[in-house]
Image (tube, rainbow, N blue to C red; front, side, top):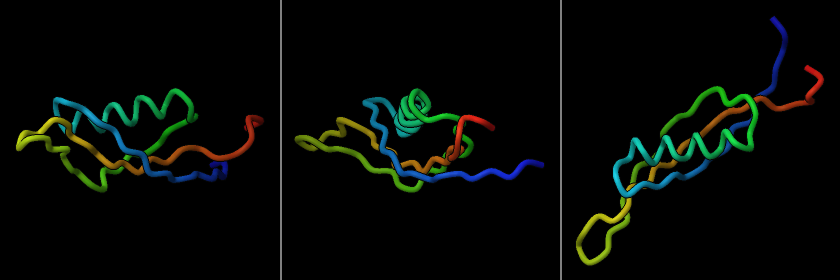
Length: 72
């Protein structure tokens, strides 16, 4: 098995529909600029509230991706 190094970053996704959609938005957006995403871990859920109504769901996600040269 080849040795690899992975970096972990924290991102926040939002959705007007659900926490699940917020997490999906975060991961799918990150995958456009980060290569070889491996794991996504939800670390926090919260909601944005305006005038007593929930207007957005926010999901904080830690994602890991392969870190290193393109020569692998």
